[in-house]
Length: 114
Ligand SMILES: [Zn+2]
Image (tube, rainbow, N blue to C red; front, side):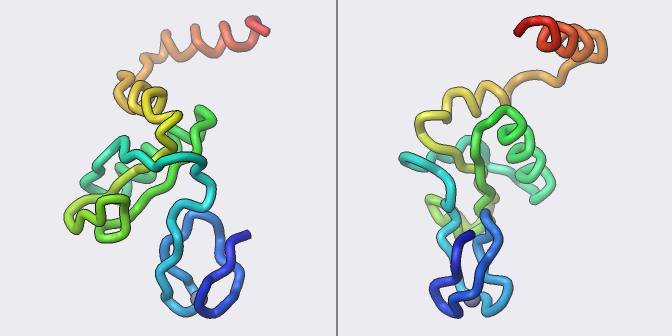
């Protein structure tokens, strides 16, 4: 578990601010390689759901709030992954939502396709 550089308390992974003392933390605890922004979200909900979608596919991602991200943009929320996984991440984020039929087919296929 990461440790706050300021107060030395344990902090949960993926936190960008220490919940004990408010110190800024390195928001890249488990990204290997160069961080790449794959989504500029306009809301925390959008960023969080994108992060969840990526992590469901096995791609570690973190959400950097305004002013904290790679480019420290004050106006948007960045979803960031390793450069190695950026292409996959963009493909996942750009994939259209599955219809019920497609979802069932995919689930059936993944079940029998060992
Ligand atoms: Zn702290």
